[in-house]
Length: 205
Image 1 (tube, one colour):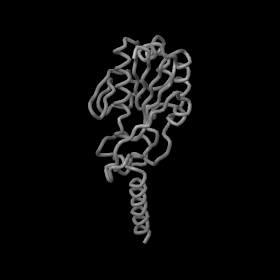
Image 2 (tube, helix red, strand yellow):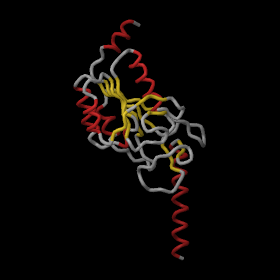
Image 3 (tube, rainbow, N blue to C red):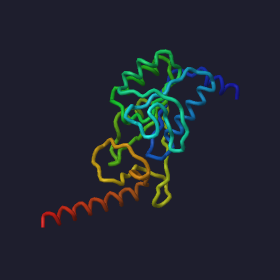
Image 4 (cartoon, rainbow, N blue to C red):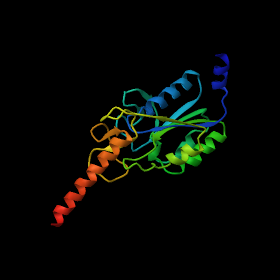
């Protein structure tokens, strides 16, 4: 046990990525790791994209309402500027930040900082989202967390959008998104495509 504690205290710089669909517990896991680092009296700072105002402007809040104060940022470069004396840096909703985040995380880790990143690995179309794929590639550790499919109870694979909006970035909660397994996601997308094709055919008739 003592060896584990010493290891946590003297860990070299590293990048840890927590990814998955919506409602999978990504933010919950990020908050848990950050609170443990604070309990160990490490110098910590957590950041999130300033566009994410769903629960709070200046807190990271999980769907279960666990809260930790954070600093909202408009760009990844700001994270580098504000992390000069930090030992642990947390970044929530990383998919909304720019591609420069990959280099920022690498620079921090190379300086001995433990970087913990949480974000959606895919958008509502099942496409890899923002800088997340590259972050997974360079990470020392990747944790894939899963929600439960609301239609069949299997492990969720993707975040299915419930409203008609083709923009990649659309903030929302349970009224806008649902976690689905691969099979249920394919059925839902297929049904929507059929309905769309039928609507198009009707308009052209």
